[in-house]
Amino acid sequence: MTHQAENPEFAIHNRKEIVFVLEDLAKHRTPVNLDTPEGVGLVTSVLGVNSEGNHVYMDISPDDRINERITHSKYVSFVTQTGVKVRWHATHLHLVELQDGNAFSMHVPAVIERIQRREYFRLSTPQGSKALICRIPNGDGAIEANIVDMSLGGIGISVRGGPYEVFAPDALLEGCSVELPVIGVVPMNLRVRGIWTSIKTKSGEQVHRLGLEFEGLSRAAANVIQRYLIQLEAEKINLT
Image (tube, rainbow, N blue to C red; front, side, top):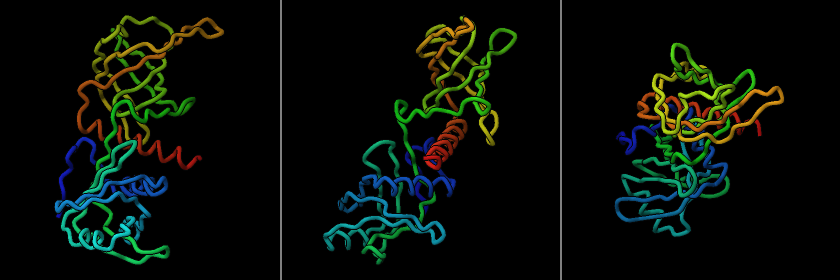
């Protein structure tokens, strides 16, 4: 049985990305609420992921009666308690014996939802030769701004020179684009939400930091940006 995502714009279908998210939950022992339609609830956590065997292992209750009721349920939902909300469903859980004790076992879900509120988890983006560039139309030309951070809600940019009239407070910047590594060019509209800082370099050049919000972002573009942020998180984790 395939479950439809409650928030399709946050749905992840790529299996490698799903495994990465679940492994990250296991690494941080993130508390997860388990619920069934029969009213059984449990705070659990992801113990591990066997990607080759296509299994996810979850912590069980110390009460055998609760564990039995959960394994008899034909629909079990999971949602994390803290940070970015991760949600998924399973049709059957089984009790299995692992090296450290018993656990619930379920198949790696075909889809999960990773729901970020805009103010959460703004990630710093690569700088230098790997910096992301946002192209912003300006008259007959375009301003090329370095992206300094990104979230599902928008981007922070660094702009040299100016001031540019196009960056008036609350201005709508239409026809912008960002080129993401491997993925390609993502078209978007942006709205100016504020100038954070404005400094002058030793050479006397002005550098402005601005916050831009995604405006009417398409579902396809939102999914692409989410995939990039997951990839960026994975790279940062591998470097630590």
